[in-house]
Length: 298
Ligand code: G1P
Image (cartoon, rainbow, N blue to C red; front, side):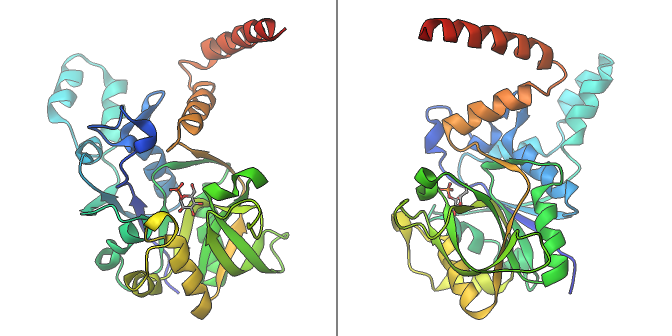
């Protein structure tokens, strides 16, 4: 079994959850304090041992390519002014081995992933959703890759989600708990895209990270549109599970869906509380703010 070295990051969506900010730019470029969303994802990939990354883009996504390229003019300017720390920061984004392909029509996540077929070839690979940031001790992608080393199978990262929110996630139906993983690894009976709380087979939702086998591309090719009229990756994974076992791992981590406004604000605050330049000030501000808000409530 070969080690997985390739990741695919779908980042082609319109970003309608962030209009008007995303009218002319990519939602993946919106900053969390000072770092664009896409950089968090690329950093997680590199920290997990991934060496080549394909980003699936679309129109208005050029800033993503530019962000990971050099900016000679800016670098010269910083050098002349002796701003070495900033220079290092600017240069640090050029370290990843990135490839880009455009999805011509946004027909859904499954269709976006199928654009990666020739890049991936005949190897297992990782999918990291471009609007899901996971905070964890061990990168969540690494947690999945460690499991792949053991079972050589397709593996999904899952997290417990509130019953009322099952209609925002792919939800797994557990077949069996796999022994030897502290009750955190399951074989799948099925996986369903965004079921209503009443129909959800569990509260374990897909947390934006997947290890997939290349067989997924054949299945995506013949897949009819599913939920919301889109070609759903979740449906292809359900089909994959019919011929090759698919597993899910309850990962250690917290998911921020920065594709929606609340997830974005939430992570911005959490990250701001850790950022050396904002941590102390923001903490003080939030304490005062919560006291003031409590006062308003009483
Ligand atoms: C996508 C997937 C879903 C997954 C979710 C995680 O949905 O289709 O299965 O659970 O991401 O955020 P989206 O949120 O892009 O609509």
